[in-house]
Image: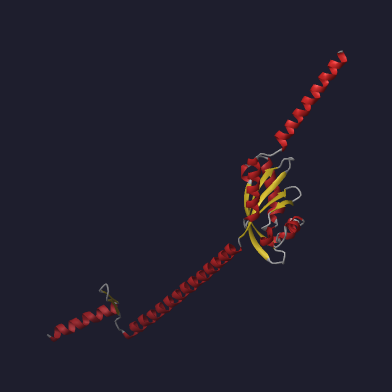
Amino acid sequence: MGKTRASNTEAKLEEKNQKNEFAGVHLFAAPSDDLLASEEKYRLLAENISDVVWVMDAASQKFKYVSPSMEKLLGYSQDEITAKSPEEIIAPESRDVLQIKLPGRVANFLAGDPSAVTKTDELLQFRKDGSLIWTEIVSTLVKNKDGGLDIVGVSRDISKRKQSEKTLRENEEKYRKLAEELEQRVMERTNEIKSVQRRLEIAAQAAELGIWDWNIITNINIRQTNACHLRHLAENIQGNDR
């Protein structure tokens, strides 16, 4: 009798545990409709925008995810780019971002520095055909569920902007040189005029001539000493004639 009751109790407990286990799986394993809709929305967004969305493991610097638009940006398919190392797609002049800046940034992030969370960099990258392209990369450091560190980034083509900046710099340099040349010519011309004026003054003094300068606009008459002397002399002669 006692054994029968014990067996019945154990059977009920087992049945209850199974129900609880099933309920737990149903509760935690099955995503809600809202979560599925949200994941689908972000998946569609990542796969259809022109910017490249990617996730990289900070320790190994290997891609964990790359959106399909990478093929348009660099010419690589998703499978091809995930097999590439950063050194293979980043030009030497831009590799310091990964080799020098990233380790220090990760250390600052782990130390709680909020300025290390998100950074914007401009990188010169290799395309699959060997050509170079300027990209702007906005990257954010995040801790993943395994306790590691991921880099979540967005890359975009900024070739047109870089070309516009280059053209602007070239125009500024051209106009700067033009202004310097113009200033130099003005100085040379001014010196020539001063030299001619000085020669005239010497010649006038030697010939005992008077030189005067009349500004028609301001009606100011500037005379040298000889000119004033000759004017007084002429006035005296006219007075004597009277």
